[in-house]
Image (cartoon, rainbow, N blue to C red; front, top):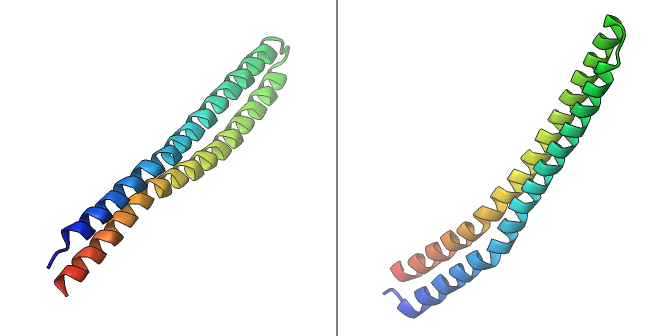
Length: 116
């Protein structure tokens, strides 16, 4: 027979776990937003510097070298940023799933006990 009191207690524990993890989830989103903002700020600075240098170039060879260096640097920065963001999103996903795992485990335990 299903024990209502135990089911209610388990439900309350699950809800408490979800509420507790809310601050961890908020921190994860904040870290992603901060990282994205910093990347955008740095990219604008780099692009501005590149265009300022490009204006002062006097030969085609110098312009091509400047363009090549900027493209290479931009690519490397984008790859590094993608890796950072992928790691942050992965951590956020783990944080989001943690309370659900607890709920599933508790639910399974309650229903297993009630059917035996």
